[in-house]
Image 1 (cartoon, rainbow, N blue to C red):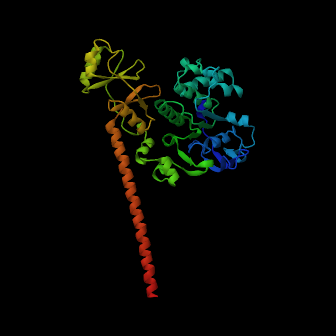
Image 2: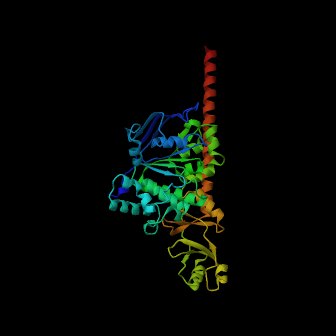
Image 3: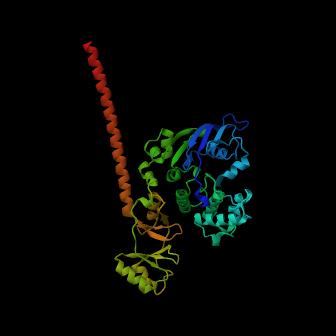
Length: 412
């Protein structure tokens, strides 16, 4: 059995409270919540509402003033906090890697502390690097300063998963990277969760990120009071009050694009050539394809450039300056919103879909995306009409009952 086949654990928070000395109000006040095993729950709320404090109380980086924490039914409130933390993965913003340790040493830290053998640690490090999409041979011996922000975050997630904990706590883990890298890291987390089925508690202030990643979202007011705890669909279509509506913001129908994945729509093939093909072969392929452009793949079959007919005419024997670099790609786990943004920033009217190692798998075009938007808007319109009819029916029933009651009184 693979070491990463252990699944998630349930979490219960019972009357969880944190008071700081000298402060008139508690930072977190009487939180009660049940999180199912294998579920991704997002804490979202304004800055200072206590969402990170609540998260840190689960692994007791912050000690609760009162209340209980149960993991898989076991009360961990009085457990040795160091032992507890070794059972829970923890990933934070900017990865928090130790700069003097290599990638392998960072990932192997907790397994080493709990007594795993060197061979088992080495095997686990290789497995995890592969799992988070980093080549073990290439990254094993690097130091954090030699990695991009996105690569550091991947290593941070790998380190959090190293000892195969049932629970993964994530405190704004993708908040410090650029938007494109952030989208790709979110997709990677969704893909990982399909494989690992951990229980993930994830803090963010970004509602779009919450919709994209969460099975359920806890919208928190100040002191971590729960305004609504429900599925993304339910919160988008039925916000509990004005506070939640404010978080959802305008364009709820368009936000629902975050609930549909690229894998749910038609991914079409597109004419491709590779960088090793001759200019004549590329020209012949373009001519026979019936399209005005063709996708050039690099040596690893990753999308590299869009080539138009005119580009080839001007190439003069070399593709070095010809064509337009592919500015963005999406994976099958990306949302339709990600795909739409990628298409709008690329002048080709389509976006390339890639596999876990960046290899080309097909394209999604603007027409497919716009059809999906239309379907969502139509579904919203029908839902609103149904709700209106139900309201009218219930009003007419009330009126009818009142009239019946009035008639009965007159007869009497």
